[in-house]
Length: 109
Image (cartoon, rainbow, N blue to C red; front, side, top):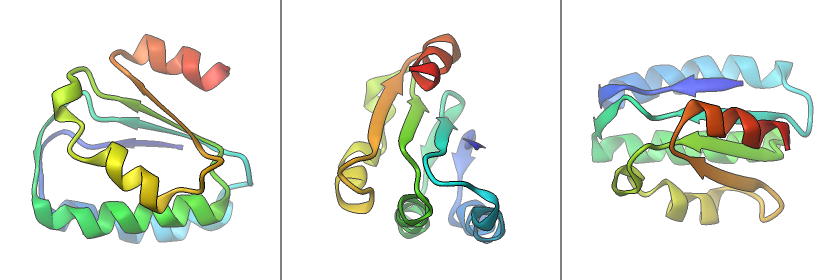
């Protein structure tokens, strides 16, 4: 599964993502991997946090085994690393990459 957020993300956009995600989760099989491309992200409203946390918890319950994030600039993490500690199972592997090429390699391993 792949998710992409770019430019300036609003709470309305993450709410829409949440609604789409709810329908897709039933199609996922345990041990799936998630690629989250944030390379085009400029900013994200603080009000997006509850939807992001909800999504993390849903992915965790659905059986995600690995989350690979593309974040070219570590300063743009927007708190995902900290939220991951609270909203993913401990067994979920989380990898942050700077490029799509690195991310694709991380998904393979």
